[in-house]
Image 1 (cartoon, rainbow, N blue to C red):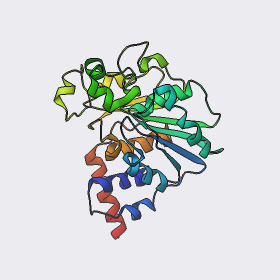
Image 2 (cartoon, rainbow, N blue to C red; image 1 turned 135 degrees about the horizontal axis):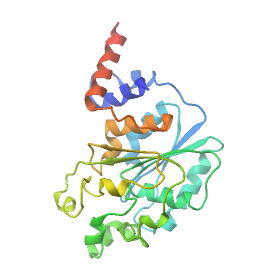
Image 3 (spheres, rainbow, N blue to C red; image 1 turned 60 degrees about the vertical axis):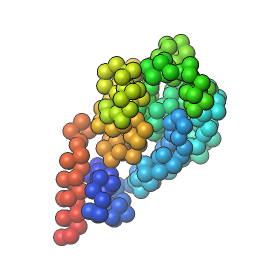
Image 4 (tube, rainbow, N blue to C red; image 1 turned 90 degrees about the horizontal axis):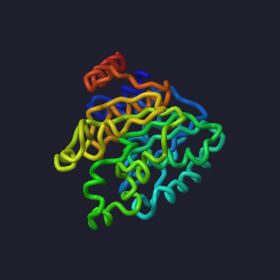
Length: 259
């Protein structure tokens, strides 16, 4: 696992080592695919860094680009069919951000591939967001988020909670940093500026971790990337991993390379 952490740490300490040099040291996985599913109002480019690092680890990566603002959750889940088909007979893993996690819950509720691997959800509103409850009726919100955005409130019959518990190998990463005090004031407890930590939890998940990350940029956070790759390989997160530990391991790695 150490080379993976070194590569992620290269993002934290610019210029300390070349990412490609560290990528060459990552233990390669075989016959595994990762489907990346972005969040509401985002695109495949939001997973650019994650895609490169997963590819460096040997995964075939399918980065789904879907029109998140133009359809309902039920309509958007169909975009996953083609993505999963690209994985062929390989083990199929998923890494999602925000709305992407709800699409996976909806899709896996309809079909479960025999070659299903692990799933990592980043900041999923598994029980909805109080922000949607508060401003979902505003015309501007509806224009910006589209039909799927209307389905992300906390209503148990209309929101994400309607999909129920999960029965697959799931790890959830929640953030507890916010750059939006207005939205955070609407959300009880710790939050990432859009979703509460509590809302990210779901019955049946294998592991859950809270990291110092914001909702919008979570997928580019070095700690989040490291924990994602650790869960995909081990089925558990590393609760002792910190920015300092990432930097320390990077320093050790560059010292060894110099020797």
